[in-house]
Image (cartoon, rainbow, N blue to C red; front, side):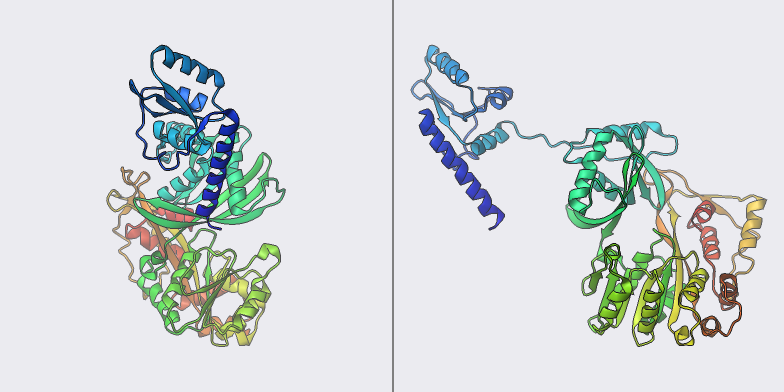
Length: 540
């Protein structure tokens, strides 16, 4: 039965019971359904407080010959009816009362006293030491209606472009922080009772327990409507019990398939050439490495989107699914519930896919299954936890051991970071001091010969300047990417041709093959005026 039918049945029951009650009370019943939204209102007869308190509404104004008519409910005091009857009779006016249903009364009252739509101020991010803004936002969040506070928080985080909302229990209050462009900013301090409301909303929507004594993971979606357009926001929810209650982190994934595009990621031409090479001959294995929040998923999804054509079967195994992509078979893997990527992958390979993405390689079983898939004609994409591409390659060898069969499987290892991008409209150039110049020269002294070397004798750096449109002088983030292309020299490590296998040796071999390191990429971006040296030191 659909929702409209259910509502109609409830209303019918309400009117029927009201009619029966009118017969018992000896008062005329009035079915106002046809006129409750169109009947002219009789204003200035009763004030709103009286109507709310006594559950009574004026229906039709009277004159010398016609009586004044009022709608009353079963909760209207008999004493009021008696007093009004006497008053109108004394004034020579006629008066009639009709019993109306509670539903009719609410509809009339919504017309007499329309609910006020409260518009709360937008959240402003406090600058360092700015306690006034913090206090103002805290006051707003503490005053938002109980049923709105959770939605308001998510809507504001989305509006600010935050990637995470951190809700942390302190002894005397709840601290709210948001991660914007990779940096964590304090937003507000909430009263503790607000968190019970937020946790209750999280429990019902993300399917987590409010009384758990161990970490939990959940997932939810929310539609956001802004400026007439609607988009779907995916939220990954992680909670952990702490001394004063459950701390929560909500990761926001702003679902917009059109944004999952390699052209929009700002990847350098040399790095893009290697990715295009992989896409043009889809086979082998590509690993994405980097810490949480470094954009690995976005890059992987963008590669999948580029491969997503009608002649390819693409299957993903994810924990959880972060973006839904049209035309791709996406399978959720609940690793906390006992499922494993390796078991899922073995099942998926029987589906004859051309491209497989594995959310993360966490164990030797998954690694070996993935590599076996990649040497049998599939392209396997996955993420892996390591700081650099060389460290990832070294860890992979530790995990699967030296094995000649696997040497031709891995084609590319990409390490990436996200750094805040300077706002071109407000950034300001400055002359670096001698120590900084020396550090930059040292950082770029081993830059491979195929890279155009900047003038390291005369260069300027840029710093952020705060403006109205850029509260911190930055606008968005950019990718810093290091790529280890698995050539003949690198394959020797997997075949066991090299006696000494560790990160430094692998990195040297990759550098000899022309790899540009994360730090070098970062410093070159600084010299181009795209970001700051402080950002590179913070992130890389």
